[in-house]
Image (cartoon, rainbow, N blue to C red):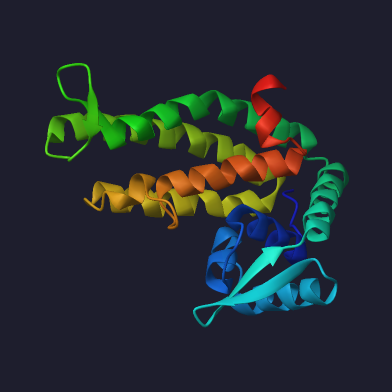
Length: 213
């Protein structure tokens, strides 16, 4: 049976993935009710595990160093207590094999060869070029969805990623091009980056040393 994570672990992890976020964005990662997120954040503030800052009148939250450290301990303990470490490690290995293809796809979406060997920004006037990239995206989406099926059978908290990927993909296919690579929004690449960071955080792997590990 899939393990159900504690709400404070979910909020702590979501805040790590967002870096600096407001309640709606933090809640969206694991489809939590805002009231649950607010309660967890309040407890974390009381324990100096996160702080709140107002930016243009909007409450935004960030983990403190001790909050990040405590979050890492919670993630490690959850893996051991749930028996999910093997499944997450396997999912991470499979995801890592896909990552170069996703990074190349995003580069190809953003720039094109101008015919002289130089690169220029993709103005998206070549529909055949864009369609080929979207076909590759569809294939990658199928592959990451298969990885997530196994991950969510181990830990329920991975179950919202297919929905988030699907929502972004549908936007892209409907012609809203920003939903593929634009940062600071739940674009396909943003969700991909967050899943990557989720796996790294869960397994206690430092992103900077990943390529040499």
